[in-house]
Image 1 (cartoon, rainbow, N blue to C red):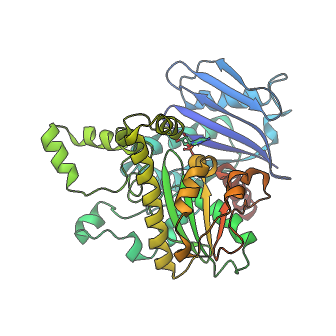
Image 2 (spheres, helix red, strand yellow):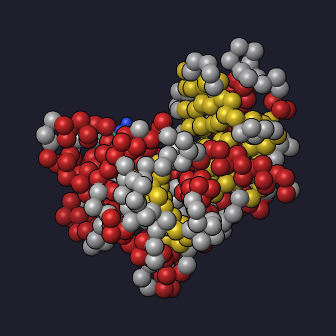
Length: 401
Ligand code: AMP
């Protein structure tokens, strides 16, 4: 069974084609600069990547171009579009309305439209991607897989902000959490390798990338997560500030004469590693600056490590224990120094890593077990795979339909 996973943003449509008999990735790419000048990046796995300018006036044109590329004699990998049995859409925000994977129907699309209130840019892109697929592939079942849904099991004490009740309710303000598909995937893999039964395990998953979030997963269910009403909450990120004293917001707006939109832009794009280091939002550049003796770059990474440690401590307390700590995403998978610094002086929490294994985790079998033999908690490095998770959910939904 072939499943096309689509991640539609406002001006891009990323895709991955899986053969789910064996869960093999067959092709992937990105129809980018939709509505601008149009570029198609495409790769059949095992062959070279291509980058071709193509007119992409809208999302329907983008998906048509992707489909015709997938069946192209030279660039493609399918004999016919009819080989694609289903489409899975990545949805960033389901709000309180979408808390499980659902088939694309008029009702579920109407629920997704409500999410325009909470995540207008992402939701607009998703709706256009879905509409484009419905037009280009009529009759092919489509599934919405929602990033926030993994966090819908949080108890009220974790998702309720201590603000005026009625105002919060009127405006749907609560912690939703993000990166849920990634946290679900890596905690699921971790559970397969722990000695503790999955319905009893206590896992902390650290998705540390350009955007970062940390989640406490108890018995396979999310009980708390660091991102909140928006992906701005939680720890320091590439260019996002994470949680700060809320009084800073009106203070800076008044002092710098900036509007709410400008303030939101500043918190999303000018802060985090970039804001503190003054160098870059990209960890590789920040690391280079540290090697050159840049003290603000060092401070930015010190803040990152310190905040991850504090979340680990907090979530270990919340779960009354820890069986496993998982690192994933761009920094979590690639930056051995962050893993090493986070796990240093954490014996109190039962965390101790083997530094040699930490350096060479890619040569270890899944789940990338880098814990020292005397570590009470396991420490795993697991490459995330949100697209595979979406493809699996799509297969599961289609088999129930
Ligand atoms: P993601 O958002 O998961 O794609 O992660 C992006 C982040 O991972 C960026 O800050 C990158 O600099 C960082 N990253 C990727 N490769 C490395 C590496 N080899 N060492 C350190 N950071 C890396």
